[in-house]
Image (cartoon, rainbow, N blue to C red):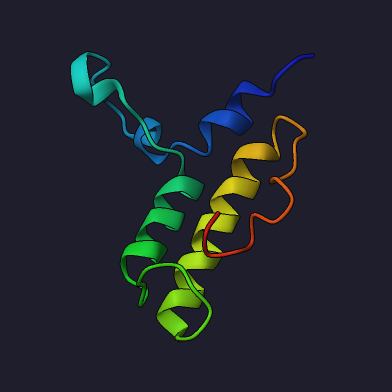
Length: 87
């Protein structure tokens, strides 16, 4: 399977800079979809997972979305019952 390198690179905003370092911690790049998800989680009202308050529901949605995103590329689905607060 061939990858479109430019399409992949487009997801890493730091690589658009004219000059960037590629040693040590600076080499760690974050795709824009991950940065956007983290920023959204950090700026949303969140609490422990649950279903009573908006903050609880937000936390549950964040966890489930992260699990789905991690399983998606590998062709897996989240475990049955993972939508409960105990999952």
